[in-house]
Length: 115
Length: 112
Image 1 (spheres, one colour):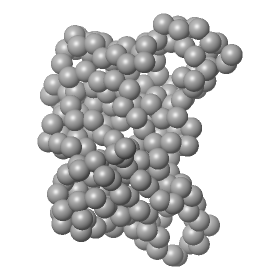
Image 2 (spheres, helix red, strand yellow; image 1 turned 90 degrees about the vertical axis):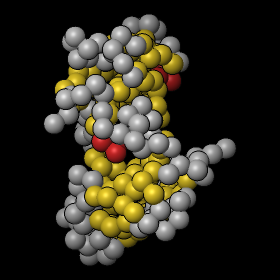
Image 3 (cartoon, rainbow over the protein chains, first blue to last red; image 1 turned 135 degrees about the vertical axis):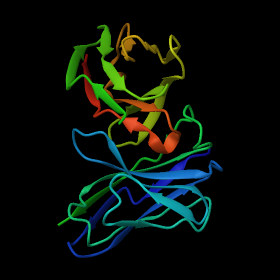
Image 4 (cartoon, helix red, strand yellow; image 1 turned 60 degrees about the vertical axis):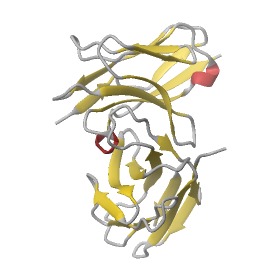
């Protein structure tokens, strides 16, 4: 079955360390996204990529970085510059980012805890 | 800018009760509207969508009608089950998927 795989499910890091979250999809989707989810809030867009080797900042990109070297993969690095990194991170993809009615497919998320 | 407002939760109902979760939106264009559901410990799944005024989206017994005159997309289900316990997100998109705007989510708990 096609889908999006995020790993690991839980991640613990010490403050000051960079950490990379994995996202892989086998849906053959062109566009991929990273969202952050905090308790009681909606999802906020961190970065998105519409094609390989290209990505754009979302609403809360500060302290994060991404790469898109392969169509299937869109890893997110949470750097030590991110002031409040503890959150639930969701990766998503869609076939046609230009269409309003193109739904997102989500992975099961990675819960990052930084102490 | 575009925005989505959902009724505040948490919402707690008994099994077989009628469910309504209110959602209203503000948009400059003619957006597509979505309901996503998030079960505990998982990512979001698309529940239903509507792409133009008066369209009704439906799935798994849930329904929502795109009401342009009231800028609303309320989620309804006639008889809820314990398995419907989840967080429900209303969302809109009027400039492509990268401009998807989410509401804050409504946590629903169904008691047997």
